[in-house]
Image (tube, rainbow, N blue to C red; front, side):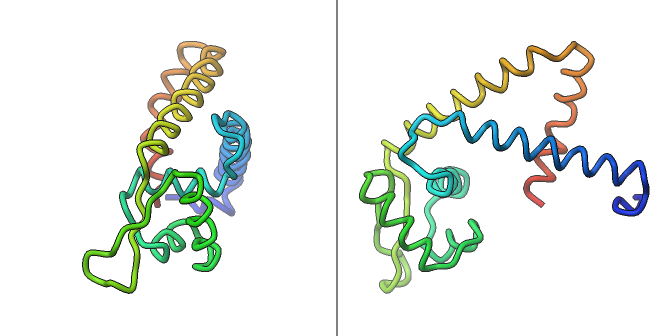
Length: 146
């Protein structure tokens, strides 16, 4: 693989990809169902949806925030009825955080709204561009999880 930072064409492609991903990400964040939740709270719910129940410490690591911040976020989500705290199966000092049915319904509605927005946007692509984007989707998914 070429040096992606110092090779002129590769560096330009990396820069273009970064810019496009950031812009699409910002635009997608505005397609929210519940405006009362912060992007961080939505991210925590999404992490619980992808990874299942977790301790607040595990969530803090996955979300790249400090544990005290995650404790506050979990408390806010619990107060809104979106997560529940249950005893840890092996360590009574810890709690497990899991989504409620209300959170699952809200996340499904949010995904549906964002998918519809993105599908509508993609209708502006020609057939060749759409095929290239479809082919790139698994690579972008892999990149997002590296």
